[in-house]
Length: 492
Image (cartoon, rainbow, N blue to C red; front, side):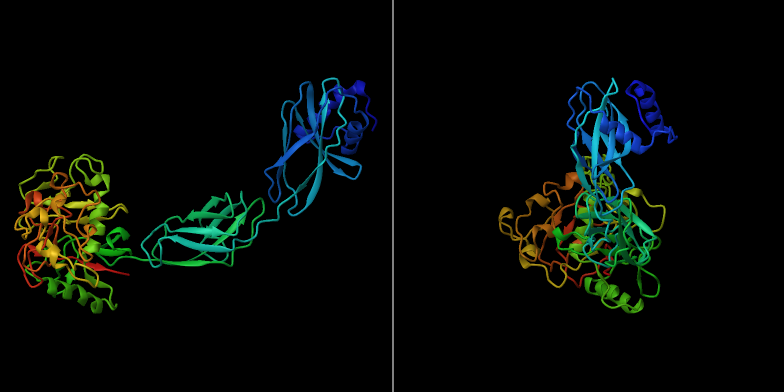
């Protein structure tokens, strides 16, 4: 079809109409290319393509610099001396997106300018675009959080390797890659994906990569066992800073006697008291045989107690003024004395309290949303000082220079404690913020020479000395009183 320049305005209008509507104007691709190739009469200088960007396995973007006086730009594919019309943009647009291309292929492109007089330039600045290969299946899947399986994380996080930037990476829990649990757009050769919430059970994870095309399901996989805590127990995140490197379960309530001599965690009944530390540990250990497991149940250790205490210390809702460190940490049934800066963080209840309908000040929330009751107040609770270690004599007797070198016979603030050892380090006693004292509801510290059995939390009569961090070391492992109870843990 011969095209006269005097008919340009009609031709250009029909050409644009073709591009926008897909309608046939009679102007074929070859005719358009010949017209541009045979009429390079424009006096406007145009250099053609500047760059190619956003190349994927099936798309790319052509870029040029708009020149003054240009009316439109036409895009061609080039094969030898032949031009094939691809599309057109109106000035001042200076970019064009190619779609639906074939992965792993190369193709040459040229952009020509047409001015308002209907003249076009004659540049031959051809640029080759090489498409990426279609996405390959990811080559590596590694769980990054939690650090190990089994765990209590509902939403574990994985690192996916062997990727191309810009691909959408999807995570699945089946080998056919149909049960999607997460996705992310990669910005490099690796990407991090956090799974949506998982039920309890064992999962194997797989991944795909998608540009326009989607890879096969990965052969690389990793597994994760989402644990559940026993009835009446809650999950507690690990806290390596206090020597509690693994997630664990703890009784939500102080241990109760179920009437058959078994320790249970329920919201009804009175705490199991008048029991020694040795007997409390035995009661917790006996739960292993009762539940058909080995070395899972035990008396809570001091590191595990500290993992809970430091966790709740940093949860805003546990503070009387609604912000972590603002006011006073809630303390529960501690008696009438309250010297906290944040007002009523505790109360005077029964000696001890039991049953339902409790004052909410006796509950504390962990950062995973779990709730624990009577961590401070109500009754003291025995701990197993270390996992396989023992309490140091220096800490138990507290022969501290600041206290005149004699054993501490009364409650003191945590900031006054200055004797620490390998078995009794600062992180086994102090809050996350070491400046916190009774004024912030932490409780206080009392040593003594009675054996240092490690009683935590405080009782219904301890007032301001009770708190999540309260520590009494004046009793032996054989002592038993109506104000001392215990709490078991379950370690998966």
